[in-house]
Length: 510
Image: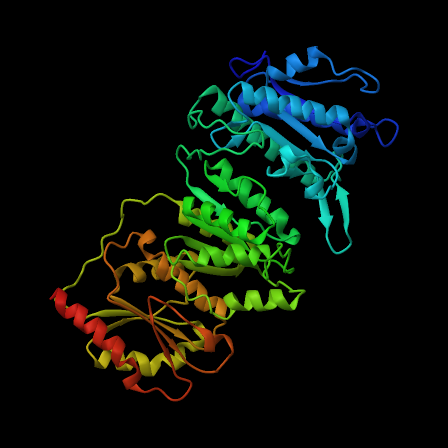
C-alpha cells in the first residue's frame, strides 16, 4: 500500500532489462540490487512500508498494455535508470512519456519545486542524449567520469570489505531525497503542495524550507564532485534547501539568467575550486565555476559567499591558476566573501557557523566608557619581538594593550583569545612572518566576532603589514579594516589614522 494518498504505488522503477543482467555468475543484477536496497533504506528513513514496483517481465515483443498505463497513472514517483539501452528503448521511453502525461493530467509533475521524477544515471551518457523530459533534472550519477580520458567507471554495489562507498553514498542521497518528497506529498511538516508543472518537470513555484535556509552550492569540476556531494548531503540533512536543484543550462546567456535567479533566492553561496578550469558554456569565455563565482560577487555584499580551495591543491591549467590567484592573493576584497584554503572539515565548520541561528549573547563586556581605550594587538608567535615598538606607541598614546597568549594548553589559549576579542575596544593585527592563511583566519575571526556574543561594535580595526615583503602582502585588502603597509623601520605616524579613529570614538562614549 502506498504511503502517498490517492496513489496505489509509491515508486515505479523504469529500466532497460539488459542493465539487470549480472556480469558474473552468482552476482545479483544491478537493478535488482538497487530496488532491494532502495526499498530497505526508504523504510528505515520513513519508519513505514514503502511500495516499490518495477515491471519484471521481458519487454521484447510485448505490447505496451493499457494495464501498465493504468498502473503508471497511480504511481506517485518515477525512478528512471538511464543507460545507453534505456535512451534507445522504445518501451522505456514510452513508460517515461506515459508517466509524464498521466502526472500532468492529475496534479502535475512537480510538488512545490520538487520533481516527481528521479533520474538515476547508471552509465555515462552525454546530457544532450538524455530524454527531453529529464534533461533539466539533476541526476544521481552512479559512476565517476574522467573528462581527460573521456571514460566513466561505474560504481559497483559490492557488499564486501572492499566495497565502493560511493555507490552507497549515492544510494543514500537518492533515498533521502525520495523520502523528503514522500513527506511533502503526504503533507507532513513540509511545504504545501503548490505549482503544477509542465511536462518538462519545471515549476513556477519555489518551496521555501520549513526551518532551514536556502543555499547556493555552486556546481564544480569533477575532481571535487565527492566533496560537493558531501556538503550537499549534510546541508539537506540539516533541513536546508540546496540550489541549483536542476541541471544548469550550458548556453552562456541562459546560464547567467538561471544562476542569477537562484542567487536571488539564496542567503549564502558556497564555491569549491578545484585543479581543473572546467567546462566553458556555449557563447561564454569563462568556465561554469568562474561564471557562478562572478555572479555571486555581483550581489555586492547582499549575499555572503564562501570560497574553498583544498589545502595543497596543484592546479593543472593556467586559466584556473589565474582564477584561484584572484582569491589566494587577496584580490577578493568584496564585502561578505570568505576564502579558505584548508581541510574540508574547516569548510564544514565555517558553513555551520554561518548558518547557525543568532544566539542570545552570553557575555556582555563592560564598555569602560570613561577609561582608557583597550587595543588587542594580535600577532604570530614569531613576530612578538617585532611588535615592541607598536606596543610602546599604543601605550604612550594612553591606550591599554592586550597581547596574545602562547603559553598554556590549546583550550586555554583559544579561550583567552576569544575573551580578548570580546573585551577590547579595538583590534590591531600585525602581519609579519606568518603566512597568508594565518592572516585570512584572523580576518575571518573579526568578521564573525558577533557570533562569539559581542554586543558592541569595535571602535577600530587595522592590519599592520610588516616585513619581510611577499607577493601575498602586496594584495591584502579589507573593506572593514584600515590596512597599513610598512617594510621599513617603524614610524608612529603610520598609526595616526588608527589612533584618531579609536580615540575619537572612545571620546564619544565618555
